[in-house]
Figure 1 (cartoon, rainbow, N blue to C red):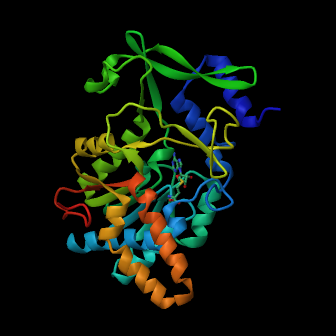
Figure 2: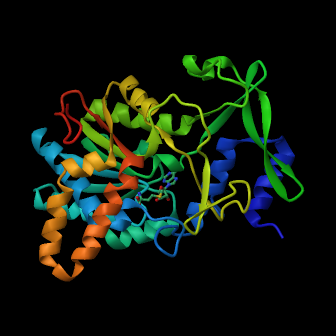
Figure 3: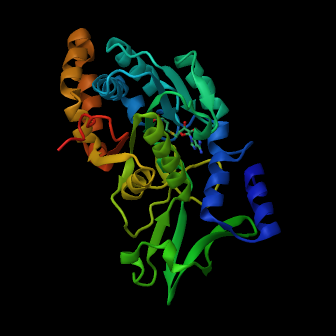
Length: 350
Ligand code: SAH
């Protein structure tokens, strides 16, 4: 028995030959009918993974404070608040509360393709405006953009060193199995110069889709004013290595089995994202670790205040704080982007 999504991908491969990993990942996650994000809410204890805003309200609140502080020091211009891939809308709700306390009550815009998650977001943030992509975001006000665990969900390509050249990894279909194969050679200028002579077997990941989103937002911020913060698991590239991963029920799975039933993601190359923003004439900051970001934004004070308010929850609040600041706080990093005339964002200064 194969699933409808398996059949759709197989038919495409049978019709036109093996497909790029980016196409495969895009179909698995965002196929208009059967894609992973189109068919379910993957978050939470009963889902496939848990994200920082779902761990604790402190996360969204501190991100909201980061936005409000920057907006205040930028002279309180008119802004729209934008979230990319808002999940259940938890971060947006927590951030909105914190921003409102600081005097910032912006229009909220969500970039979200999942109908299931749009419904969850509408419950938590009534009055938001939804977009399928970044192109339709407002053009007449400054933008404050937040993206938590968004860029890791965008499709990647993998280039593999074989003999003298680099080849694109493609996905082929054999009976009821998908399997990665080496496709035709790619031009070497797709690769960062220091990595071109890497040994046979090396894998390099690139994400043109992520670069396109960051460039578009960098151009908007440069033209309209504003700032962006992207938090994700990732590295400062260029670097070799395979990070494509499949997750189901909080454990690892095979990315080529049960398409559409497992979450696919890849680590984010922050260096390349920063360069994309700079190429669009915006200023890039960091990355800094999530631990440094939340520490500097005052997570300890916030945890103490919450515990004072609800003493019976003290242990849980401290456990949530430890989770955000422990291994996760080192693995996850934050990149900021600002307009040239905007001030240094909190936690990203020297
Ligand atoms: N930011 C949330 C959810 C992270 S999961 C949190 O931290 O809890 C990834 C989110 O990105 C989901 O909301 C998913 O539906 C959305 N998403 C994935 N691919 C997308 C795409 N190509 N365009 C817009 N949204 C996308």
